[in-house]
Image 1 (tube, rainbow, N blue to C red):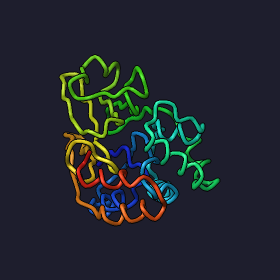
Image 2: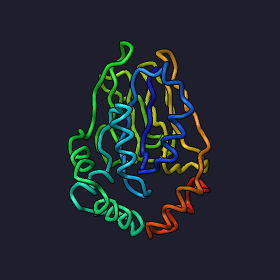
Image 3: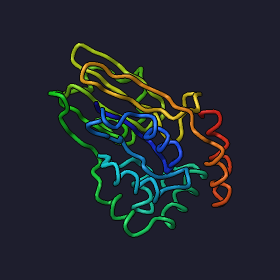
Image 4: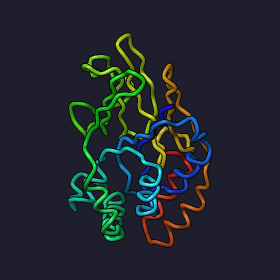
Length: 220
């Protein structure tokens, strides 16, 4: 089985909850569609968890912002968290981020996958369900995207476009961590409740903008 995640955004508590509820005996591969860091207060811990579990990840816009110290188009809260993250990252964590590709092609169960953060034509484009049309598949059977923090599955004759939603900061009005599974026949999006209070307390301890914690309760 393939585990598909995206936009963990340094939310270790949400990530570990997902990892706790899945059956690892059934998981062949874990992929992540970008934004390992940003917003939340556990960047090094999440990177260590990715390495431990062998997660295959690409870069998201927050990851790139931290690497290049460039926060163009970030709102003040996102910029504050990204600057904090850059200061907190260990050399090992920074090396890990800089080693990641911006997109990834792979095969699973005989199908060709393309994983991007935004869209095939723009890594930073917010691709929502209504714009995720069949022509975006190109020569691939499955397109995985993230960035919007809103999950969807669009099925076509040619293949599937899927956004697993966000592990660490959902924005669809549902505060539960979002992820997807593929068993070779069908894709399914799943949600799991996690301890948001613990994340909010750590955000406050690190003097990050408290709004970043408060929004987690509302999934916005």
